[in-house]
Length: 203
Ligand SMILES: [Fe+2]
Image (cartoon, rainbow, N blue to C red; front, side, top):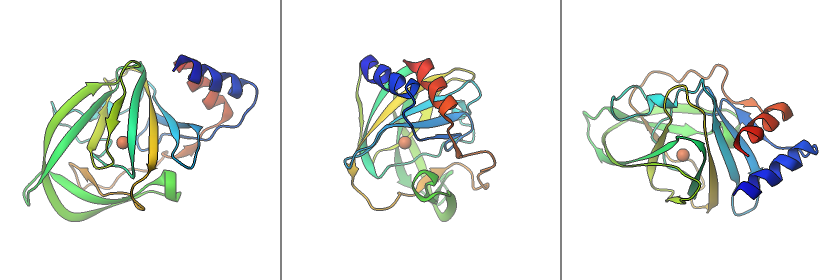
């Protein structure tokens, strides 16, 4: 894994272009594409000290900054830096549940995001929490519902290896609010300087 990151760091230093998104989904969380293939992408997510991922903690339950969501493809998660925790949930439909289903289109895929409540509600049962490490490979099915927690003020990074697409469209996600999402400042293109800065910190 060190070799893989080091390779991309050296490529970036040599001027190879990389695509990435600053403030991807939440402020302070940045997504960098390291490898593209027809089978799926390999991305690194980097949370800087100003991230809001500490809000994604079942205890105490704040308003989540990163909705509980599934994916279009199966994923493998590998920790690279700091303490990023993969939290998984099981859902039970409940008209009085505090989680509100939202239809979601991703800014990564469609250019601009949207999040619309469907009116369906559910209760969420927290069933696993695991800090990501370099040694472990956390396998996530596209159906698995998760969010990611990082302690407040701490940097963290993890790699996401996508499998081939299992679905054509994004699945709905679940938020514990129906307030509109504040998109101001989200989904900014990553500069080459940002790419180097992130790779420098995780290599
Ligand atoms: Fe995810």
